[in-house]
Image (cartoon, rainbow, N blue to C red; front, side, top):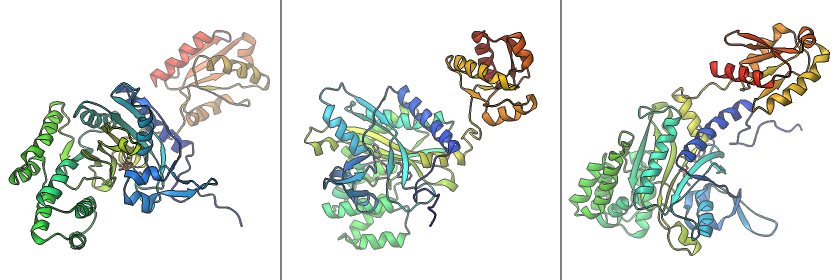
Length: 441
Ligand code: HAM
């Protein structure tokens, strides 16, 4: 039986077109992270399952992890997320590193999910995290970075919003206002996390599985109805919890002062499925009704390093997936056209004996940082234009018998039709002309 040509379910083959798009997404990620002076790191594809058991949460471990026992009887997983690896790496160096530690990475991750729009089994995830930043500065910087990243793709507050909450507030509501037990608090987190995705009856059913009485449930529903920061603050104040509300208030003031408020809204259902978050939690959503998916998720985690017996070093960060990002950019027509590759020069000759002169010339031009597509056989003058369009070059070089006799090449700007003859040995002049074609495009 012939083997299938399809990739494994939920993964993608990146043919050159798809890879050009992904390279573009990554280039903007690198540029944004570097503009905030974040340093690039990476880790291994495989980790011991224990690493995720410590803090990542039930869903990831029970349903989503790819795990197996290796030949040495170690129980290992293909990384489903980067944060535990990052915490492990930071735990091993943080004593020597000046604070804050600002790192970023673009790992590929695997989760056993039901493949659907925006959800695959393998995705790449832009991760930016900061450890040991002064109180609130880390959170503000991370939020600023998410917004700037999407702005660098041309998006505005018309296209996306950042829905934010604070686990301190949620904890206060669950533990001190609802007075839920530890076990019920854990369940309430899971119910809130699903609140927008399921019908009201399903919420009622899940609440029925807790030990909450009617009065406690009514507090829970009141919390779910909070639609703004002010609403959430009044709810806390109604129950005498003004101390807890003041921390969120100060964060909101700072967010306003740096102009991020048009992007941010409070959402009581944002609690995040991963267990390690302890402070702010947020998700970035596409505002288009056709693509209501989280493009990005993140938050603050104070105690992740303690699983390595280290002192707590507060961290905050986010993960933004390539699948959801591409869907978002496509939805809003923000993705440039990548139909053709991009090269600086199409290098051709029009007679058999000219080819080796062109191979030698190609070497010279590449040393000037030009991307040169060599046509590996003689080609008729008229056919060059079509080929140049396919290979994405704005300049073509011709070398016929006449040019050889004169010791020249002919260069043509394909956009403006400007044409020049340049001495075969004058690499500098050729480079200047080719670069000019690129700029005029
Ligand atoms: P997460 O919410 O699980 O967070 O994932 C972050 C983002 O990765 C999601 O918003 C989504 O864009 C993308 N993503 C997740 N799973 C898939 C999937 N199966 N297919 C396609 N895209 C997906 C985390 O992983 C945290 N570790 C992020 C973080 C970093 N928190 C602090 N620092």
